[in-house]
Length: 161
Image (tube, rainbow, N blue to C red):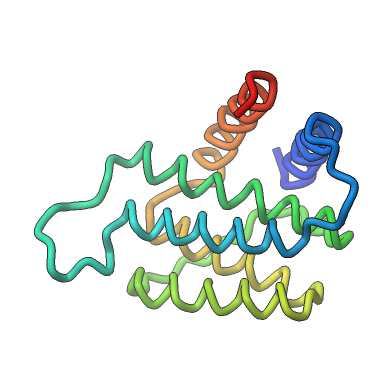
């Protein structure tokens, strides 16, 4: 499976949410902020920045779920701006400090929100490829978790989440 299948799945979910919630306005900035929040939630689960604590990171499946929450919004932002030509998962095999990666990713997202170019959108994907590698997530892990969360998001919409 390539990213095009995920874009298709996200388009279906976005359309369903827009109809269910009667969304008739541009929600680009809201989705951008949601992506930043999801990135922060991911960082929180890794606990990479919590130098004051001896508690370790959350379980792998919890961290993966937070990761794919971000993937939903990255896909959705790409759909809004027509940046859907990306097909392959960005593989960045470079060990880096997670705190530095999260800060770089936050900056990349902010840059994109304020000036949504295709290059900046692709830079977000690169950051998430780097995060995946440093967390030990394969593309297959991400796809499986994305599909599960996508189904859960439909259920949430149907039950008044």
